[in-house]
Amino acid sequence: MSAERDPVSSADLVIEARDLRKSFGEREALRGVGFGAARGELLAVIGPNGAGKTTLLSILAGIRAPDAGTVSLPPGDIGWVPQLAAVYRRLTVEENLRLFARLEGVPDVEATVADMLERVELADRRADPVGTLSGGNQQRVNIAIGLLARPPVLLLDEPTSGLDPRSREHLWHFLTSLADEGTTVIFSTHNIGEAERHGRRLLVIADGEVLFFGTVAELHRAEPVGEGAATERDFERAFIDFLSARGH
Image (cartoon, rainbow, N blue to C red):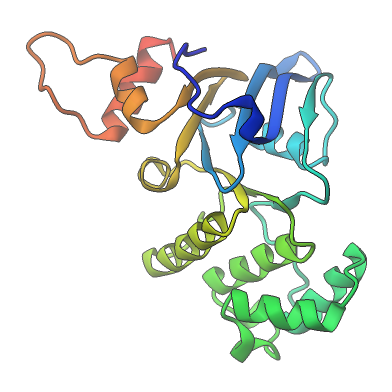
């Protein structure tokens, strides 16, 4: 694991994982993973396929239990947005939100649904069956469901997978605004550009282990450019070099 200094003090942390371990039969999906995230932080979880990113997020969300290790969570529910939209395609946008708000035990269902429709900019599509929406709008519904209980932490697994550039831009504008309002947003992604642009810090995982935890600039410095090579690299090149130097 990188020895880079964590710029966030332990007193600022909203969510913290310590020495998380999880195995599926002979395969170790997580091997001693630990990190913390502060209030209003955007944290990107990146790594190769099969690195353990989805397993980590599902444990943080309470979907799976770790074999060992602990997770310190804030009071209240944790918002969980899986990669596949957890919606009923034949129900309308409003019906989906109302159903999940009731399942969440939200005190004022109608007010919460109305507020969420405005926040995700789908008030004009409230009566449309979810199955008729574009992929980007379906993902907005998915995120709205994760936010119904107004969680202090929102977890998203590949939130922009399959979205067109404009839908991605709209989604990131919304997620950034959530972080600005104080929601801690932790997202996994295979899009290195997204991680660079939107992640305040990066958690790099490979083969179930944390290889790096820090900022983009710190990752660039963690794998110096060789003598005689160009002095500047784009982030994707730096990330690939970082993994290659560590046998991944």
